[in-house]
Length: 263
Image (cartoon, rainbow, N blue to C red):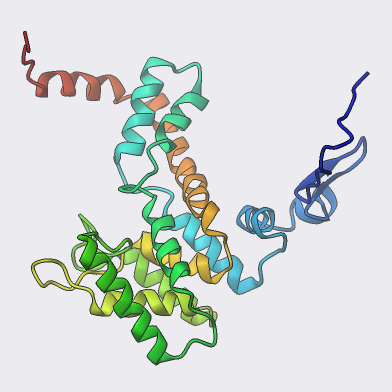
């Protein structure tokens, strides 16, 4: 017989519950109200926030998921393909290998930008003068620490990230260019590289700002990026299964690397 500690605090969850006849997700009947009626991105938003998004919020949230789904043969894709080469019978391991690399260089910028903006504390009532002050403080803080401002610059899209322009256009179309995004744009307008060149706002910075405006907790921002990229990783693995390149990549690395004995 199961026993419970009477001093244990009560545990509650609003995420989901299942019975013999029903499955409930955040108060909605999964089969009766969500399946076939609500897109996956909106259900994901519901799971995170506890409510379904408005039409405009759903469009922005889904656009963010699409924006980060894939970026070519990046380390996430390569790690997944190489892991699949060694263990094709365990695709979940290859997917995990791909997304475990989400960090300060790939995908993690999403979270880092959101944290910087949220810490500054802009609200819908924040005026232009205060946004200017906040932007100046963010730039000065990072400059004093010799740190890069997350969300600015891109190793490939030197003249501007095409995803950023589309995301901002959608936000303006739905009147969802909120305080975090407005602050991020102020920072981008005033920040420069060490060489004095203006830095473009990348997709990670735009996504972090827009989702902060949609009240996504900064603690789970990277999780949103991981879910998005997981779809792209599965796509790479589907291709790997029918047109393998993992073994070729392995042999390329062996040929390119020079062995240096240290004894």
